[in-house]
Amino acid sequence: MIFPRSNRVEHHLPHFEGVLAQVLATPQLGAKFVEHELLIEANGRTTKPRNEGFEQFFFVLEGELQFELEGKSHKMVQGSFCWLPPNRPYHFVNRGEALCRAIWIRRRYEMVDGVPVPEPIFAHESDVPAYPTDTCMEQHLTPYEQLGYDMGINLQTFDPGVYFSFVEAHVMEHGLYMVAGRGLYWLNHDLIEVQKDDFIYMAPFCPQFFYATGWEKSAYLLYKDVNRDYVQFL
Image 1: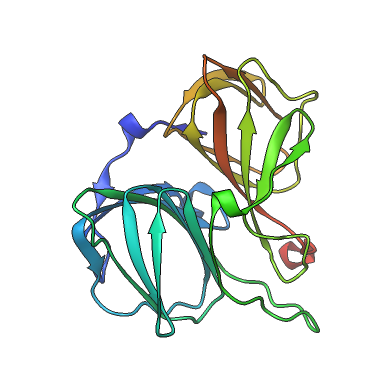
Image 2: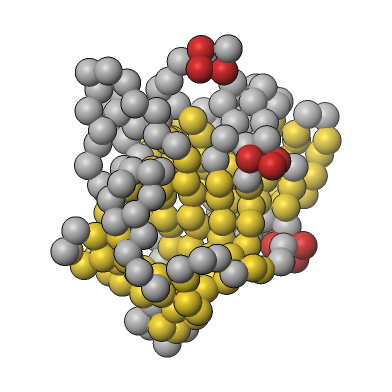
């Protein structure tokens, strides 16, 4: 499913002020996660600390946020991100003068006996090393080489004219947000042009292939479920 920004509408969510949300993926779609793009006006904020039984991921697309967690303040600017384990109350406010746009992903954390739940992460994409993976450069914003993480978040970057060397059919579901550039995405026999700010939901086992077009680098933020068995679906 391709969801261009031009086709999305905004709505209000409880316990936010000066914040509009664009829905990207929900269980009604068949997803096992919820993803929004938040449009946070100057002085937009949470109206009380949010304490949810879900793990969460935030990525700032533009603007800045002041994020409060456990008595510590974190300034998040474009390219900043955080991952939060469940039941960690947080609060944020846009103290800048411009609109802040942020990706917000939530899912139910799957506990595993003997595997501790990781601590929160606050970082910037520039802090994360990039490694060549197939034909692109890949950054693991959540270090899911560690079994404690069941939410994998990648930032994948392609030079113009670069494409995957094969058609992938991952067993995971994906939420993909184009953060830069443009390209052609082949999804289950359909070839569709995508560009910055488009969102794609890919169900498990969907064949996929990307070809970066245009004159600048293309990049996308990719969510996937990782490090857990699938017997919970039996």
